[in-house]
Length: 147
Image 1 (cartoon, rainbow, N blue to C red):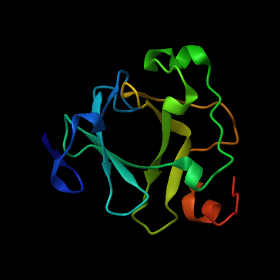
Image 2: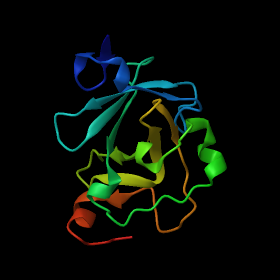
Image 3: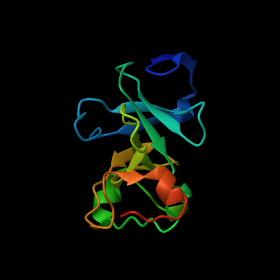
Image 4: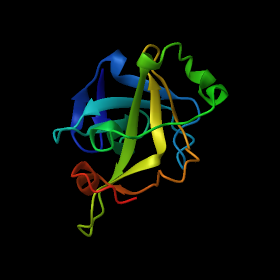
């Protein structure tokens, strides 16, 4: 299937790259179908809306720069994803690249959680005050835990 993307123009995707967010992303509740597309700049990925070409989020595996990252969510909140085994879970943090050249940050308070077995996904909101919406990816990857 070909889709129009915000960052890369027309792109061919496979069915297995499509995830469904029943409740959408916060602030984007009307959009439920997204494709996970590898970004040319590794290790980032694009989370591209299938319904609106100019709606896409850059994301990263948070464990790459925060190996101590923990997601503490009530099982009942994860029920709609149908997770049977923790190894079926993929987690991404949404990334912000400020236009003014300030540090690239990741939102560890609102991770994207995906069940890779059925491609159901959700954006969670963590209550742990340790996780903020803006974690400096480069500084924290270098071991500077600037919480």
